[in-house]
Every structure is written in structure tokens, then in C-alpha cells.
Length: 528
Image (tube, rainbow, N blue to C red; front, top):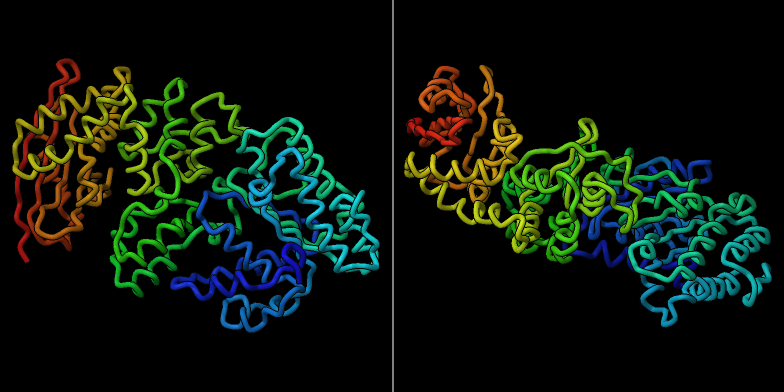
């Protein structure tokens, strides 16, 4: 047993002793299917605090020859899988974190030498028959000699493999790192010795020099996690169980943290947010506090054509198209707003709808961070004024102050909409989303909610007591009265058939020539 070679299961024990532990052990079933196959090179990228390190500890504890983890896994889901015993503690595991080595190295340009010397010493001690040359052997040579002497294969677990992409390192160090990767993963002689290589980071593999050194790897990212989707974060079923256990409202939990859409069937939650919310017994901003909002603002304020309009659209609750194929997975080669948005998908500030090729702000926690990111940006001054005025607009709507609402929407529609798309209904809906931003603290806001006889343009369904639900219908160059009539004629209130309380039917009409809005509000009491 060593620190880096065949580590103990001490970290896994600590995780199992945590107040909250969500069993993700079936990830091992997926990896077992890849061990000792042509598909054994795996690169997993996901945002910070999304459980990469915890997964690494579990994988090491399961495969490492340096411990006996049979009792540790006995009550976990993987123990019932047919592949469990076949691979349990059967491999020489090399586990290391590039970021930890980088931070511990005083002379950064000697990083690869430091990593090699440290791990090679452990290999030499564990395999004296391999006759490792500590002065001259690379890490790949040391692994090859150990395999040649014993026939025992290795599993390589490398965390934060992309840290040198994210840090401003010297050309000498970067070239040294490329050679290091190539010697480990492009060495055809070494490949039979590697049963599994599992790399994790925030960014996918850089589509330039690094890609050529790692083209053996299958990538699992926020764009397409494939069969590993359910292990990217906490699933809906896991979150429901936590809410039941901690007596927390699941619907409110969804508003705060849901939205990372992995595919049509799976949407995941940030593990950091969920664990913190359950332990604090209060919903709030947890994942976003682990980093600076400047990480977001530095990119959405870039001068790319159309980026401001799309940012406003997403803050307003709508999706925007994104081409995720052009981004090179670096921090320097941004050539378009799509590159910026793709980067923010990988960081967790956006979610990706792969089917429709669109991105969007996933939830309330992240939406608040976007507001923080643009708060002091001159180009977004009017948008921040709208957000700050959204509480007053909601209050006046609830007071049925039709004149105030109409005047407020005059400003909102103009401020939040590009003149070229002023008459576009989707743009107006986005402007409405920003104008009623404060309503997110009391309502679930649903756009284009199906009613059976059409769609309600906007429905505000309360999740706090003693406030009315609001149904909003928008009209272009018609009349606010006709909007109210449509709500009544098509019985949009049927969509709230289980709701009991006041309903506000709100009709909004805007004149595209004068840019003036008209508002009519009708109150309906739904009896028990």
C-alpha cells in the first residue's frame, strides 16, 4: 500500500461516514464493462464540486490491491452486480492529482519530473524484481517494467488532468506535459499493461496538441455523458429521497437546483448544492459560492456579435441556439459567442439541450449568479434596473394597477429587446421574464404552458401561500381586452384545476408602431 500506488480505502471510508452519502457505486459496473477492453481509456469532464474527486476515491478503493474493500462495498448497490467480485481489489492502481502536484512543486517547470520521481519510487519499492532505474526511467517505463516482471496490469486514475490548460504555464512545462501524456497513452507497447485509464477534469480534451496525445480516450462531458449521465450529478429520484429524508419541499428544490439536462430521460442536480441545502435545511446559493462570479462575467462581457442579446434572452428564461462543435476546449481560442456558451456549459453556468442544440440557464441558483455577473457592466445597466424594479412590478400587478404595469412594460420591452426583434413574440416573452424576475422567489414561472385548447403565454403558479396565481396572455396590435377574452374563452384556468385561491387574468397588448402597451387585469376567485 502506498500513497499513489495501490492507495488505501481511507478516503472512501470517510465519504461513507459523511452525514449525506448518495450511492453512486453502479458507476463501477459501467467501468467494469470497459476494463481490459479496447474502450478502457475514459475521460470524464464536469463542473467543479460535481463529485469528480469522490468518484475517484470510490474507484480507487474498489480496484486497488492496497486494501480489502469487501466490507466497505457490501451494502452498496454494486455489491449485487455480477461483476462485483471479479474486479474487487484486483489491480495495481496509480492514483494522482495533477493540480495537487502542481501546487506542491516549487519549480513549476520540473512538475513532470517531480511526479515521475515520486510515483516511480513507490513502484520500485513494490516491484523490486522490475529493477526500476530511478534516475532514468519515465513513469511509463516503470509501469512497463513492473508489468513485464509480474504480468500484473495497472489502472491509472488521473484527476485534474486539464489544470495545465487552465493555468498560464510556460511553453517548456506544457511541452513536457504533452510528452508525459504521450508516453502514457500513446505508447503501443504499454497499452496491454493498462487495464483502465480514468481521467477527470473540468474541460474536455483540448482539440489541438493534447487531442493528438489522447485520441485513445472516449469522452464523457456535459455535452454528452452517454451511459455515465446518471453519475454526473444527483438524479431526480436521489433528490426526491433526500427531500423526503430531510423534510424539504421537492418542488422548491427543483426551482433552485434542477436543470442540468443530460438527455431526454436524465436531468441532474449539483451535488454540492444539494448536500449543503439539506444540511442547512434551507435553499440558497451554495455551489456558486465556491467560486467567483467573475469567472462568468469575464466571458459573457466579451465583444462577440449577438452575445448581449442572447444573455438577456437566457436571463429572461428562454433558450438560445449554440454550436458546440467549434469550441477548442481552451481558455484562449474564443472566436464566437457559441465558443463562450459552450465553455460555460462545461463550467456549469449553462445547461445544454442536445436534441434542439440550445443552451439555457438551468435554475434559480445559477440565474442569480448571472445577475451578479452583469450587475456592474455598463452595457447591462438597463437590464439590472429592470431586475431591481421587478419587485415593484409584481406588487403592482397583484394590486391590479393596470396603468403602472403597462408603463413598466413599455420600458421593459424596449430595454430588453433588440430593435430588429422588437415584434418577435419570443423576444417579448424574454423581456417579460426579466421584468418579472422577482416573481421567481414566489412563483414557478412557466412559458407557453399547454392548456388543452392552446397555450398560455405565461403562467405564474405560486409556491407560497396566500397570493394569487397569474395567467398572462400577450397580443400584438390587438387589444388587452381581446387577450382577457382569449384566456376566458379557451379556459386557460383549467390548467390550474387543482389550484384554490385568487386568479389574475392579465391581458397585455402592445402597439408595434407607438411601442405603447395596454394592460387589463381581471380577478377570478376559485372556490374550494
